Image (tube, rainbow over all chains, first blue to last red; front, side):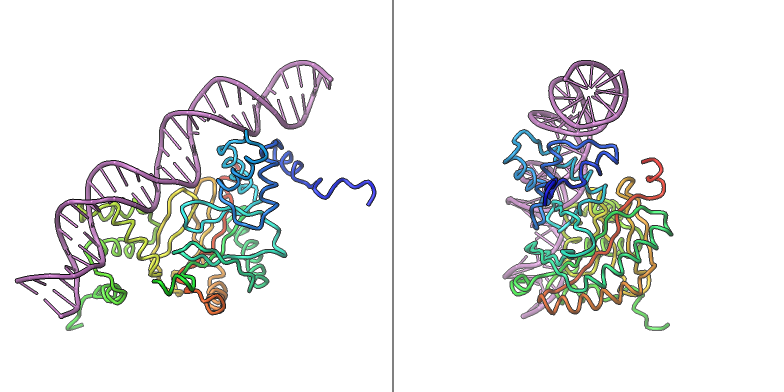
Length: 156
Length: 156
DNA sequence: TCTCTTATTGAAAATGATTCCCATTATCAA
DNA sequence: TTGATAATGGGAATCATTTTCAATAAGAGA
């Protein structure tokens, strides 16, 4: 492992510049926070995390960056019906990919990976056909089930 | 067609009472508005529509009823990333069933019905297995694609 | 390395959908 | 018909997200 460039020389700055955007300190920090967690973070969560390292970064910038990343198709934006959005890094349609079971009462979110192969298969075909037919540039998708978790069913 | 009870004698009041809820004028009106349209209505849309007939019905009640109906699994609640939710009657997993392609720029929503049979097949199996495995009572699901429509791609 | 263009930023104010509060009213089982 | 209580509505409160705008910083080109 000589001449290494570090595991994180990554392609982010390139991707950004390729789209005509600039790579900045706040953006780096936000991407890193998202990369380091497996949780579904809210804008506020991310803001607080970034704030530990770069206290000057503002919440507005976090929102703006999240919108940018979502539009670029690099993060997923989720609506778990809590009144706030949550975000997660796109890890590619490969391993780690999961979907959600959302409890509409306690807001608990269960990640599930069953059927993922089937789902991916289905999604790929759907995306291909739909984007062609409707001339749509698809860069994000949601599959989600809403209901009541075991605990909330009982106390209903 | 003698002795008819009218096409709308329906089972709504029964469903409500069966769940321990009461059938009221505002609830009737809200359900009717949702049944009469094929559009995706926002709470405000529904409020204005109901208001034409029953001006005394308040926006708060509309929100409360929509939450109730969503929890009962009788309407779908959608997030088209406009900053407001939209609702649609569940017509059963049969005809008329569709999913959405959402333009994240102009907020245009395209209903598509391709793959619906496949989707329903997949969804049914998934719901069955997942609800068993995680002891979840599933009463709603979302499949949605986000991206840029033809017009917004050009002007990007 | 320095400069200039302009994308980006941050603070504070604004926005706007949704929820909360609570006194009043209406539903419906008995 | 009546009583227990579910449901209502108006307005205030909440709170996530956006907007505004002057100041700052990225990075292409000299």
